Image (cartoon, rainbow, N blue to C red):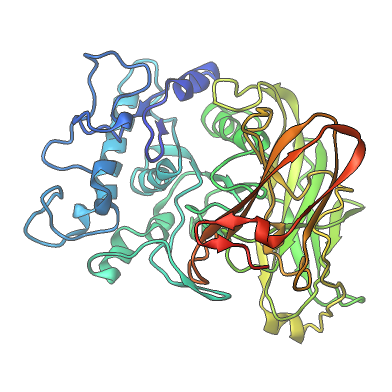
Amino acid sequence: MHIHGGGQRAFLGEVKLLVAHGYAALSVNWGGSGTGKAPFNTPEGAQPDDPNPDWGSVDPSQLNVQGYNTMLPGPKQLFEDHEDPRNNNWYLLTLGCRRGLTFLEQQPEVDAQRLGVHGFSMGGNLTMYVAGTDDRVKAAVPGVGGQGWRWQPHQFLGGVAQQEQVKGDLEVFKRTLSFESYAPNIKSPVLHRSGTNDFHGWMDDVYRTNALIPNQPTRYCWSPHLNHRLIPEVAVAMPLWFDHYLKGGPALPQTPTSELKLQTADHIPQLRVTPDKKSLPIARVDIYYSVDSDPRARFWRSAEVMREGDAFIAKLPLHTLDLPLFTFANVYYTLLKPKSLAQLRGESASIREVCISSLLHSADPLKLREAKVAATTTVSPVIDDFSHGLRDWYKLNAGNLTHQETWTRKITDPMYRSPDGAKLELTLKMPKTNHLTFVVRQNEWRNYRGQRATFTCERETQGSDAVQTIILAPTEFISDTGPLKS
C-alpha cells in the first residue's frame, strides 16, 4: 500500500511500479475530502464519477491544516466539546490507511500474511503510524518523514528551533501521537529513505526514533545534500526491501559497522567503516562529516576515503574545536541485475547500485577536547576548485537546461570564509553566450538567526572558447530588503 505525501494524491504511477514488481497495489487518496476545493482531491487518472474519500463531518485532509498539531475541540474535529488525542488529524488518517490494508487483504490476489506499506513525506509519517498500530504490516518503508520529537525544542548554534507547536496537553500528545511513542510498537522491518538535509524528517531524530524499534531489522538510506528528494540508488531500496521480506528475495546488505575514533596518533578524528560484503559487491564507500548542529542546513564535507583490508577509513580534519562533529557513511553496492523504477517521475530507468547508510556518529566540543583532538586545517576563501567535479553540489531539474539549478551548502560551512570586502570570483569555460542567474539564500531554515532572505545576481556572458573569469561584488546580489552585505 502506497501513502501519498502532503498536497499530493493517489498515484497511478506508484501502483504500476509495484504491480511491475509482482505486487497487488493500492494507493490511498487520503487527501481527498469530497469537497472538490483542492487540486489534490481527485486521484490521478480518475474519471468524473469515480468514488473519492468523503470524510463527512470531520476533515483530516489538508483543508484542515490546523488539525495536524492540535488535540483541541473544533468544528472539523472528532469531538467538538473536549480535548482528545483523537481530534488530531493523524488519528483519523491512520485509521483510513488501516482500512486500506483491510481492503487489500480481502482481495483474492493478496496474501493477507504479506502486507507492506510505504509513503513519502506526510505519507512517511503515516507509514510509521500504521506500522506502529497494525501488526498486519510485515514490512515498512517510510520516506522523508516519520521521525519523533517534533515537539521538542532543539538547541542549535544561534538559537532554538522545533518542528511543531502542539496545541493541547503536551504530555498527552507525547504519549499518544508522537512518533517516538509508536516506534516501540512496530513489529515489522523498517527501511528509512530520506535526504540528509530534509526539513520534514530531521536526520538526527530519525536515528533516535528508529533506535526504539525493538527486535526488528532497520536500514537507513541517505541521499547526500538533498532535501525532500531521493537519489536513484536510495529510491531503489524500497522494492528491494519488499522483495526480501514479502517475497523471500535476496536480503539487502546489513547496516555497515562504523566507529568514530577521536583518539588517534595524529589527533585527527577518524571514521572506520566495515561494510557487509556477503550479499552484493561493494562499488564504493563515501564518508561525510559536518560541524553544523542543524540537520536541515548542515553542509556535509566529503572525506578522503582509504581502504584498509575489509574496512574503509577517512580522516575528518577540523578547523576548530568549538563546534560539534557529525559523521556517517554511504556504502554503494552493485546490483546483480539492474533495477527499473521507470514508473516513478524523474527516476532513472536502469539503476545499477543501491545505497545503504551507516549509523550517525557525533561528538560535542567537550568530547573533542577530552580526546585531545587538534585543529589541523585552516579556513579557506576557495569555495571549490572542482578537482572532484560536483561532489559537494547537487542538481535540481538535471538535464533541463532551461530550469537546471546547481546548488551547494558549502558556504554555510565556517571553514569557507573570505575577508571583509571580498568578491566572488568564478572561472569557467562557456562556449555559448548565456544568461546566468546566481542565487544566495541567507538563513534558510535558520529563522532563529535572523530573517530569511534570497539574493540574486544576473549576468549576460559572451560565448568564448577561452577561459573566462566572472567577478561579482556583494552589492550586485539584490533582495527585497537590499544588497548582500558580505
